[in-house]
Image (cartoon, rainbow, N blue to C red):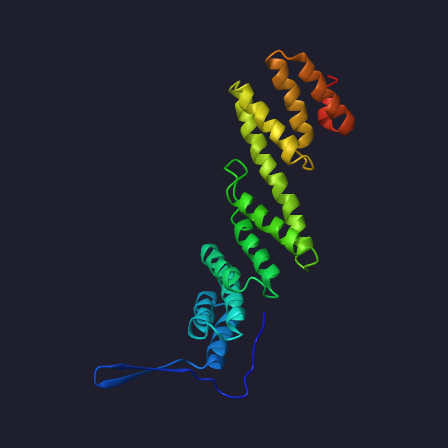
Length: 241
C-alpha cells in the first residue's frame, strides 16, 4: 500500500459549452481524494474507501497514480469481503497495467479472492479451481516474487482440497456401483494430483473397483503400485487383510 504526498493542490479542469452558457466541470484535487480515501480505509470503512480510490482512476486515468489507486481499491474491496467487485477491479488493473511492478501482488490478491470463497469439500470444485489457476499463474510468471512461496503453499492446499472433492464423488459412485465413473475419477487423482494425500487411497480404491468388475490383472497392478510407492501407508496395510 502506498500513500502519496503533494506539495501543492492538483486540479484538472474540463470546460465545455452548452448553448449560450459555459459549463465548467472541476475535478477534485488528486491529493484530496487520496487523503479522504486513506482516512476511510484507516477507519475500516472499506466500501467508501474503495469508491474514493476508484474515483482517482476515473478522474485521473492518465496519472501515474491511477494504477496505485486501483490496487488500493481492490484491496479495500477484498477487506470489505466484496470479492466479486475486487476481482473486477483487479481484472481492470491487469488489462491496463500488465507490466506494473505490483502485477504479482494483484495476481495473488485475485487468487485470495477465490480462495476465501472455497466451500464444503462435498460440493463442486468451483472457486478452488479458480484460486488454483491464479496461484499457479503467479508462481509460473513471478517465481521470485515475495508472494510466490505463499502461493505455492496455497496450491498444495488446494490440490488436496480438489482431490478430496474428486475422492468424495468417486466414493459415491462406488456405493452406487457405478464402477466406470469411479475408476475414471480415481485415475484422475493419480494422474493430476499424485502428490496429494489422496493418492494412496485412490490406488487402494482402484483395486476394489477392478475386483468388483472382475479384472484381476488391473487389481494386481494397482496393488503393486500402492505397495511400491506407499509401503507404510494404512491403505497398503489394508491390502494384507
